[in-house]
Image (cartoon, rainbow, N blue to C red; front, side, top):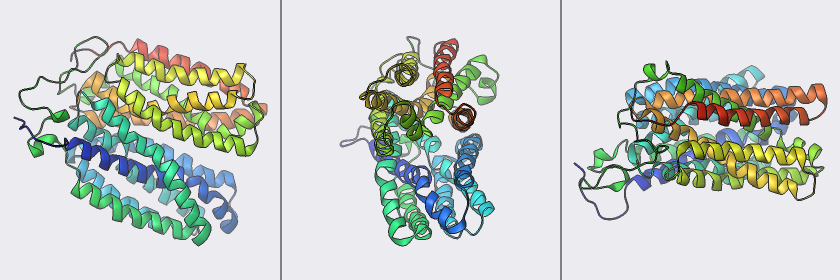
Length: 417
């Protein structure tokens, strides 16, 4: 039974720690990558296409790692997985600084993708699920803002280190920072469940009623939920899997080409398009908080429809409206709604299937997200090579967004398990 405690609920310290971890690993492992393209090109003579392939490998491997990482979390707990992966991530960043060939660079980044997966969204979301019930969406949204903050804060810092001391030293600094910051945070702050401290989720006391989450008007799932092998045999799961695959295919396909796309469709300068990309990441942080918060109070299908629908509307703006301010309206709408997907992925598991197989099911949805993103990025580039225009792939992505909403509604409402 929970005991009443004065002061701030310890779950919010878990949120702060997870925010820091998301900021560190997103800023170092994903957002900073483009900083190293020119230095690597200059030193080794690799083509930009060959260097960019590294991030495609990173995304695919990270997506495929989601399922086994989820299984390890279910067996050993998020803290143990995060400790091992923090150690491994630091070592991988140090190993990247020793790069001498392209195959070595690919190999180490592939291992790094697995390690970062084990310290990022999947274990963090598992902790939010354990520590929060009524406020789960809000807590998850706050932690995921760390991803955007990593791009806004750490990427420029890595850029300054690279400019002054070289790309090798930048990777050394990143690796040491992971060990110095992430390891103590995981070991000293993270607690896997509130019962370890005699608490209940959300800081409730034993006398308080269970959380009253909104599940599309239906009663919430039982706390235990359904086992993964049973869920994988349902059409509901595959509808939801397909919905997130389609939305991520469109989102990453657009985001990874946004700078040249805006230059072509909106006639902006490269500097303006780059500034719009930065703003996209910035308003994405606000979107993470807002979508997390409304998921605590709105029917979940409505939240998903709003997230995917706003992204579709932003694409439509680029295709059908042409005036100077449109690039900034598009950026605000797309960036804000883009922030919702990474928040909704972990929340959909709790809403539809409970938490008994949370890590495994989130890992499966993570595969949909990353494979969709990798394919969308490639499709956009390939279509441009054949048509010399971004218009055709944008029509394709617009249709995929609309289909993603339809497919999610076909999955039905969340029901009592």
